[in-house]
Length: 315
Length: 278
Image (cartoon, rainbow over all chains, first blue to last red):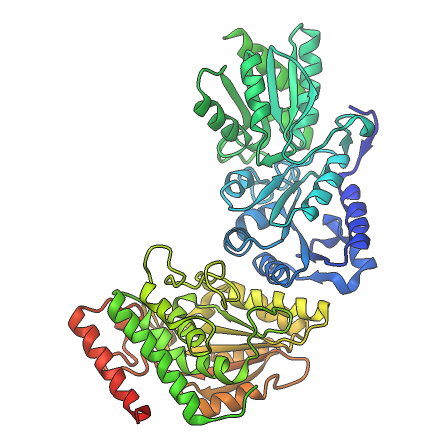
């Protein structure tokens, strides 16, 4: 992890403008989300390729789908619950089943809006988006991954969902050491006592946990699944052979997300080590400062380390 | 746009109705009422108004059948326009048919976008119209909606967007047959007329007899009605038009005829077609 923190929205904003200069088919679609969602600079530089829909997410997704059918590459940014849930049917029918080349960007996933309550928290997006046909799901955690995810999304000829982080945080590794690759998990730390599979903001907490565990003599791997769909099954199976315990950590409901996806692979494979899924319980509606909320749900670095130590001991 | 020939268009609309009735009679089920009410408007669009080029999307006018359940009218128009072969109707509702009970653009050439869930057509039309503006293309986007369908809130999001952005390449038609599944639309939920509602949103609105191909042609040929405004045509129709027992009858939104009833309907529709037999 780097010492310095970087704002993921600034990385997104910069990448959007760079991509806009490279490719004149890219169109930005805002649902009153341009400034908060990192489209401000694109709107300023390319007003003729910028569409403000207003607070109308269902229509926003369909406008993007219609434009995509005409060869444009719309990038629509919406606060995540209103994209993944309010506009879910448009995403399913008009983006997924129609295989339209729309880039769906959920602004602030998981607990990012930690003080705003259950309407703005989203712990269900992976559960629903994983069922969408033809979709690639990218879940960046830091500024480097955000730029990577947006560039990959535009290069893919088909629908992509990006769950954008919101809080500034360190880079998971120095930029020059990263080997980010579509569909490939990033092994940030190796280890065989436990293997933590995670994505997005939970990567930072998992790295903290691995460092705390190391001090206790427990060697935990940290595997960053930036591409949640298709998931890097090879990486899951490799650690299923080596690690004593598999753990998933995510700012998502314990049903339907990475925990479920990894469990599906292990259940099919058979003879695997036990798995523990750390995340948010169904119906969770606690609010408060972001760091404290992570702790409350047991997915802060310290809590992850405590839980893994206890889970290993109980084996 | 072609020159108006009333007899040709009435014959085209008749043939679409014949496809609808024969197909349901031989395959057992379908949304007859709405397909029959919309048949004239769709006939005029495909046979006289639209420039349809399935292999040249940048030049082709677009048609979005927002109420996808009226698909048999669209399939009929595609057949009459020579875009799909008429023998496709024999596969209607069969396993993996290109003609399912809602149109699927990934399965059938000539369908611009898959529809079925109500309230998607007008928002999609906004996307096509914005793409035309961004790319400097001159196609028009036609969208046909139902009157009951106006209950979907997404229509009103899109109505606001289209007017705010001056999308005058959009021509929307409401097939106002006055019936929805649970009753007369006026009794289920119709607080004001569509003319008043869309007018208040900034659209230019005209009302027409939706079974008069001449009136439909004139109003469609005159769109956009006002520069800088999207156009709406309120097309006053009868659900089940063309079959006496079905017309304005709430029982026939979805029709699952017994063999005898189907045969009688086919006989009735063919009787109407004798006008073109020589």
